[in-house]
Length: 396
Image (cartoon, rainbow, N blue to C red; front, top):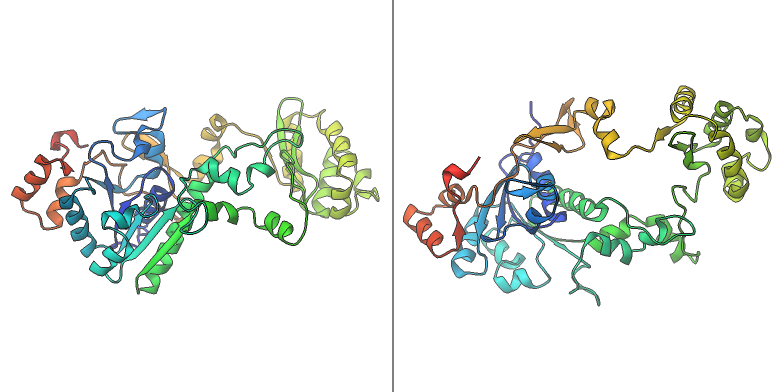
C-alpha cells in the first residue's frame, strides 16, 4: 500500500528556485495535492537553470517539482489575487518564498490567507529571517554558506574557503520546512511558520559555533579530515583515493592490523583518540606511507572484511552505476527521465512521486474549474493574461 499520509491535503506552492520547491515536493510525495503557482510568462526561474534542459524545464527544476500541478497565474493583478484567495478557501497549507514584505503587499500574506482559512498552515521561507540588519537582503545557497561560516571550515588547510559542492542549505531548508509543516498539520490549529536559509546554515555548524560561543577559537579548514577524530579522512592509494573512518580505538586497531602496522595501535602516542588528535601530524604520514603502496580495491576489501568503515571517493558517474544505488530503489523513472525519490521507505515500499514535474500552466484549466470558475470566466482570465492556459495537445 502506498504511503500517502497527506492524501486529502491541498498545498498552495508560491515558491521558486530550490528550497521552497523541495519542501512542497516532499509534501507531494507524501500524498498532498500540490498546486504550484507560477508567473504566466516565465514560470519558476529554476526552469531556466541549466544545463541540462528538458521540455519545459531544466535538471534543477525537474529535481524539485515532481508530483505537482502547475497553475500559471499573475498574482499582481486583482483578478489573479482573487483566484488565489478562492483557492486558499480550500487549502490546508500555503508556502511562499517571496522577498520580505512582498506577500503582504500583494495581499497574500499570512493574515490575509488565514482570514479565509483559519486552520491554514502558512509557511514563509526567507533568506536571513524576518528581523535583523540583513532581513531585507536576498539569499542564495552559497551566500549562506559564506555568511554562516560553512565555507570557513571547508577546503584544504592551507587553501582558500570552498563552497560545499551540493545545494546543502537549499535542500536542508526544504526538509526543515516540510517537517515543520507536517508537525503543524498534526497539531491541527493552523500556524504561521517562518524558516530561513541563514538559520538552516547555522544549524549545520552546531558544535563549531557552540565552541566559539564558549570562548574557543574558530575552527579552521581540515580538507577531508575531521578535527575531532583521527584517522577520519581521505588517503591516497596507488590508483585513487579512499575514505577511512576509524571512529574509535577498536577501529583504529583494526585499521593498523589491515595495513600491516599493528605496532602503531600500541604506540603510546596513538593509544586513544585524544592522543591521536594531539599527534595527528605524526600519525597521518605514517598511515599514508603504508596506504600509498596499496590499490584502492585491495585495501577496501581488507578494511571492509575487518569491519572498518571505508569507501572509495566516487565521482557521480561511478555513483550512477553503483550496485548499491540500484539496490536502494531510490532512482525513479518519470516522463522518460530518472529522478531521485525521497530517501525513505514505508513497510519496505519506496516512497515515490505521483507524477512527473509539470509543464508551465499544464493544469491551469482544471484547477480553475475545481475552484468553481465557469468556462466564460476562465476564458476572460486567459484573454487578459491573468492566467496561462496551456493547450490540451501541448500537455503530456
